[in-house]
Length: 402
Ligand SMILES: Cc1ncc(COP(=O)(O)O)c(C=O)c1O
Image (cartoon, rainbow, N blue to C red; front, side, top):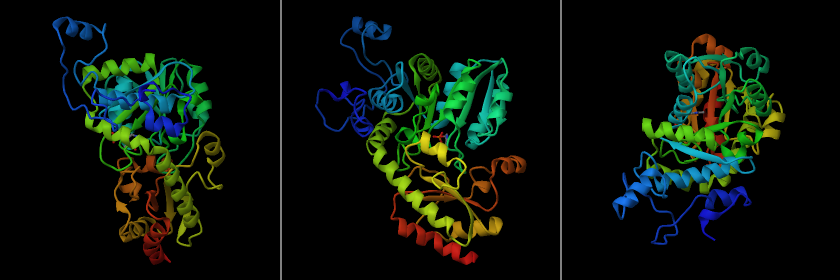
């Protein structure tokens, strides 16, 4: 059987290695990278047929590229298995290009968006500052206050947007309920699934219409490339593809190759991220210098039961509050020698950051307070190093707080 023909019947681990892959005439085992901006034809008539869409083939890499298509096919299978209807994917230059492209292609002036307040800072800026300029208004609501979502609905509401679990506090939103709220108004539910990836959560199977990713995170898994993905029903994603062709926020073939190679180890990596994060969260929750741990894998977390139902694992990101405010948080961050002091996540290497002064620094003090971003909060995206080494690395700073 050709890898290309593999069906939905296969298990996730097999799909993540085999789906979407195809070989050139050279019969390479590991997929080739198609680094070519344009493509050639045997005749003028063939060029005409390919340009017209009457014959399969590529025209130009801003439109389609074989490496990018392999990734799109693989992601469509991973996010869309078991979901009714034809699911397709569109790769973009970054996670932000995925969000921007989806909104630009599906919304118009006069439309209204409801967005969780607890989203990535640049996502907040896109909705609050840029869409507003083009006549698309956004109301921000608390992720898990469903009454706020219902009350924000207007006849013009066309899109509900959220991340679950949230960054950095791991709040978990009920996707089935939000899909019902969106569809009662003929609006679309769009979910940023980059913290879970399809290895842990498939929003389309809970009724979401569109999934977006920053592939830059766990899909790459080793912090090398920027990229984004949009996945959903063909009719919607076709519109995003058309926007991409015009706007040019295209993923490079090299990055696409890195991402679909990254997907091959995604289930194994996500399992290991979850295991390490669970262990670190339990250890931190017993530590005398720590006031509170935010991780949905802990029974004490308000989203624990929902996360158990909706996710296959609790993810690799946790946050904790230390006693003593910013100075204490910075002491812990400045003391680590293994963890990387950086705001990116989804890497094999553990990263540590102070959300109030990095990832969430542009929020007003009021918005920080509403989103639970305190000065004593530290976020860790737990990598795949040995867990005892990670505990010792944190212990150096934590013991100075006692
Ligand atoms: C949850 C989330 N969504 C989207 C993005 C944007 O992705 P990118 O940096 O690939 O544009 C990020 C980036 O950090 C993110 O954390």
